[in-house]
Image (cartoon, one colour):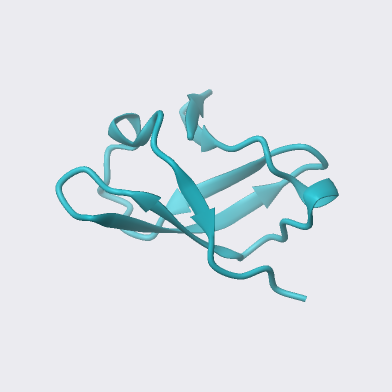
Length: 72
């Protein structure tokens, strides 16, 4: 995960099969994991948003993220 322009970003987009509203899990900081929803997708990147909107996204920078599903 990277932080760019106040949002999280991952270099996996629609070209790789990612879809908007897919669920993803990142390694957590104070919990073992953090659940996120993909809110935006471009061809080569996507924007995951933590379900807990009070989460400081800056502490998630550099964490590993894994997609749980790719909606059809």
